[in-house]
Image (tube, rainbow, N blue to C red; front, side, top):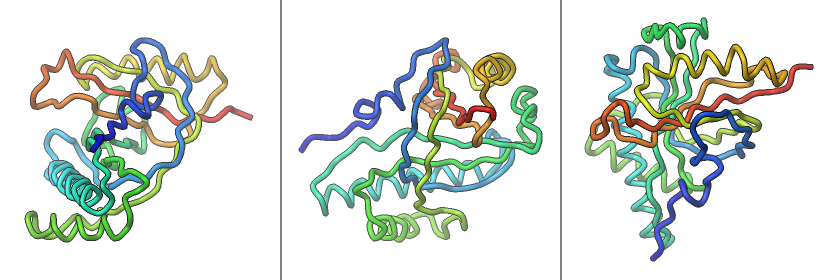
Length: 205
């Protein structure tokens, strides 16, 4: 049985180069998602969200393999980030951040598979977060780049995107800041972390 790796089959979405912001058209996909707010380094809700996302995603993977004969690598953790004042991402005032953490679920994963995976994971972890759900999400036109380094070193990259790149292209925000985590921070030194930084955009009228 061939194991699907979506980082390879969807390379334009998961394989940008470092340095420049490239345009990409992001189609609608479905995700397992959990909402929350606060500093991801200290907020208990963040740790709980990630634990539940991986638990449900792996249970869904095994369900798809058993029912459909389709095996796949669980896609990387992703996050949508926003705040009342977007400058809080540049100043790194993390307690003001709001987020939706999520992991992509292939389109062949059904609602029943998700519900069964949720029940199985609940048997291990208890009561799931209220916002845990399977939901479609589409971004359309976006700018993205690969950032190599610590999360706190993203600020100058985002400042350049917001203050130089988007204005030079006549573009405005069209959705929350999106990050895709290609590295495991528990196993990778901060200077080598690889993170895709994506911003949905639209052309100004």
